[in-house]
Structures are given as C-alpha cells and as structure tokens.
Image (cartoon, rainbow, N blue to C red; front, side):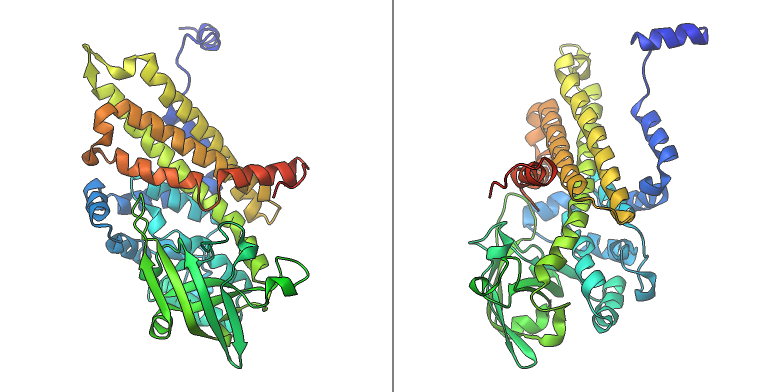
Length: 414
C-alpha cells in the first residue's frame, strides 16, 4: 500500500494506530532519564521470584513479606536514594519511582517497604552529620530498617498541626507521651521517624510551629514504655496503633532544630506523593494487562469476551487514564529533581494516578466476572490494595482543596 494512502487511512481511523508496545518504545526513547529501563528490568526479575501464591499466603496469614523486603534490600533497591558516600546508590527520585512502579506492575506490594524511600528525606536533608553517619550506612546495608512513620493520631487525622503526642525536654532526654494510629510496619522496623509537639499549640504564634522530628530506636523504646497494637484492616498492610508512655528518646536523636519539624516533614511530602503515584501507575498497568489478557482468552457465547465493546471500552478508558496520569508523574519527578516547585504537580500526579489505578481495578474485576472474586486470580487482593490510595497517604479531597487554594486562588476551605 502506498505510504500516502496508508497515512490517509490511518488519519481516518481505518489503519491501526500505535500499540501499547510502540508507545512504551517512544516513551523510552524520549525520556530515558525518567524511564530507567535497566532498573525496571532488574526489579522485574527480582519480583518474578515472588509470584501470586507468595502474596496470597501472606494475605491469608496477615504476615509481613520479610523475604521479599530482604531481597529488595540485598539488591540495593531500598537504598536507591541514599548517597553513595553512605553506602547507597545516590539515584534520583525518578529511579526510586521506577523501582516502586515495577514492583506493583509485577503484582507485588511495595507498601511493605516504600516508606523507607519517602521518609528518608527528613534525615537526608535535615539530619546532622553524626546522625547520617550513624544510621544511613546501616540502613543502606539492611542492618537497620527505617520503615515506620509516626504522624497520624486518632483525634487529628490529616490535621497534623493538631497532634497531641508531646515530647518534653528533660536534660539530655525527651520524654514522649501520646498515641499514633495507622503507623504501618512499626512491628517490622528498627527505627521510627516520629512527629511530636515540643511546644503546646496554644503557646506558638503559628500552628505549624512547635512540632519536632525524632529518630526513635524501636528496640530501646519497647523496653521503656512503647507498646504496639496491630490493626486488622481490609488489606494486609502491617498497620498498627502505637502508644508512648514516658518513652525516653535521647536529645541527640532530634532531627534538625526543635520546633521546625512540620516544615521538615512537609518538604518530603512531594516525594511521597510522587512515589505513591508511581506505585498507582504500576498497579494500573497490572490490572490493564490482566484484564486484556483474560478478555482475549475467556470465551462466552462462542466468542472472546474482549470482542464485545462493553468489555473493551472500560479497559481502553482505563489505559488512557493511566497514560495521562503517567505523564503527570514524570512531570512532577522531573520538576522535583531540578529543584523547581512541584507541589501542584506532585499532588495532581498522586490524585490522577490513584484514580487511574482504581478505574483499572474496576475494569479488571468486572472483566473477570465471578472469577475476579476468587483468591487464585489475585485480582481481589490487588483490588483491595488499590483502594487505599484514594484515602492515603492523603485523601483525594484534600488534594482537590490544595489545588483550589494554591493553584486557583480560591478561599481556603478548612
């Protein structure tokens, strides 16, 4: 067929457009610094050793994927953001995003260890040299796990400035009292990054003042007043309530300046949004690939169900949503890495990616019909896991409020 004729037919929609594989190749060619193809391939190989049965067994037992986390640690993947001088890889945020995306795309669950990536920033940017030298090499080697982030409280929710956990300075020690909730991986972490008030809220000029960040040695804390209570949840997320009863934390474990902790945590939230968004993109790809494959293989009424537009369209729409969200994730990561403001992009990336993964989850479950509810297909497990990101680590509604206030200039709603 003459090229001109083929081009004419393509423009009329009569010749197939690019395949998903073609589009992946173009994205790789135009954005290798974001795609990190070599990293993706190696992570995919590692994840292949942890198939669906591994995760189904853990889900039934509500068990932590210790072997999976150990494999990621020994492969150096959880030390991606730690500078080379401290034993890490010194990779950019986009590389960490690629790692987490591929974990999810392979059907695994990066929530077992992703916090080590996004809470690392507080120590990297605001910790002193003694703290970095003491902790970072041991985290990079896997000797220590930094997986627990003590922020949310039962009475404050996402209103972080209203936290009540209090750290009182007594000489060379802070004495901590209070309660945290939804503190995931507290039972499987050697260190916790803790946010606590060091000045009562009614004694500060700004509500964001008077909050500090501490590195808590979990073993020591468990010996002197810390208790951990697991929470049974919809998905296997190893989440807990944590109670502090006169827990002593050495003053040398204060990160940065006393009272400036809210700013330190806030500065890391863009990284958190981007990394979680990358996980959502990985989930969406898993659901879409699973749904597309099944729709071609499942035959009802003498034809593949994927031949029916009622089955095709939700999968195709989810794919389009995923690709659009993926571009925003890449945009946010690129801005973050160049040091440019990226609050709006990071928040939009998280929201759009979470929406895309949920749309893909719905399409995948619907495509599988009754089999989608069967444990052996892994769809119901991933479906439950994907739902979380409409709520955490920040609610979609709060992202909309952020965009309304900080991008559109509308009055603050809360």
